[in-house]
Length: 173
Image 1: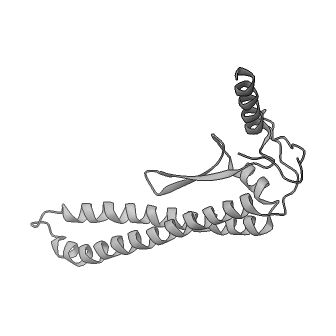
Image 2: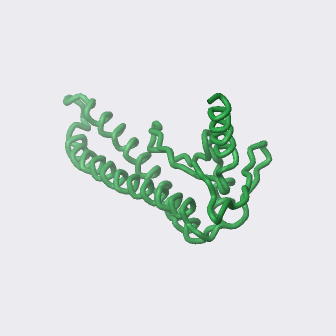
């Protein structure tokens, strides 16, 4: 019984170590002060933009989708920054005392600033969700496409091994 347990343990361990022919990427989202941050992870390691570009270039459709997602993420961050600035402006306008000579100017600027803040916040949310979905789609295209090239090796010591096919299929966990 011990031998059977040991053999099963070794099989699971080796399958886990050698079962991944290509890097399997996943997407993680983090809230930052201004907007979201979309990280692409290979296991526990967060990939840099250069590494993601290098990996995505092996799949042209995934790379194109990823570039579109990055443009939308950039637009979302710009809209988030503009929303933050207009929010600061609304707060500053709301604290102008009524005795001030610019009280009439405050009334003329406050309502448009509030509407602009709401509009920018809504538009930013649309772009944020769209960039998340497109990034997820690009990673899925990369992970599950059939036409993959050779594995990419990085110089940090983490490598990916090819295992031979056993009876026409690969064992993956």
